[in-house]
Image 1 (tube, rainbow over the protein chains, first blue to last red):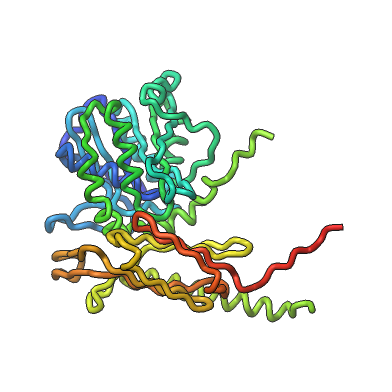
Image 2: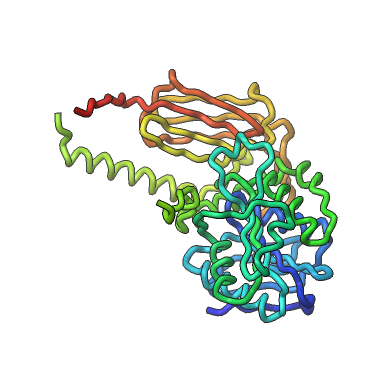
Length: 246
Length: 143
């Protein structure tokens, strides 16, 4: 039941590892795919497991695992083109993060959406941050985003934070206000703008915005599958008010 | 008059069966129709005490004039034309070129609504509908 990782090239040392898996508004996957394309990153590893559905994706006629890692310089991006099922989510995310530790990744970076019920009325989504094991979380302040103070998170990125909390792996998770059930390239663009400085890469998000409608259109099926997983994982709890302060 | 509990169970069972059928359909049906050159949009239905809220994601639909929304008691029909057709080339197991020019979707509602009181809003390719439920609510005075 373990994750089988095939490295076709050695992962970079001390890499910042971006995690882009299907979740709210597919924000993480859209952001990560954009980075791979714009920075012309190279595929260096694929992930296979009995924990995954029996799926293979074809790109340019080449069969690939839906979960793969790409790299360039000191940056790595991990994507999944298939929604990670609830029953295996905890195990998959733990093993992915354990691998990031094994290859001496310097930090795991989660990019995702923070579902906003009034997203339709928000022109520029706000980005929030959560950090773990980051020397007091200076990075969030450096990025100029607000720290997510009181919230309940569910899904794969909650598992990332949970793993980081229990181990010494530094993690920065950025969440942009987004649609929950619809692909949200606008939210992805805002996250990328914020990440640009932290990643030390010049990112022009204009091409992403120009393709926004096409992305929304072509990601409908993945979003539909992700909706089912989100429903099972209690994603609607992210709308809940915090219950600690009375 | 008090409702017969068996009627209530029967109604709930019927609703559950309908929901199951919809889920099975969603799993096995493709989200496109090559013959009709149409795509199925993503949509969501939420229920509050007095309203049913429907949202539909319609990227590449730019003008409200390209949008047609019809509502009967418990069904909403969405028809919308894309500003530019979307082309898929050699995709999936279809392996052919296909152009899609519109969206089509019949959305079943969990309860009967009053179409006369419906409100619609369209912004950035996102349609939202507020549909008042037909069942009237009566305020009960608390003594």
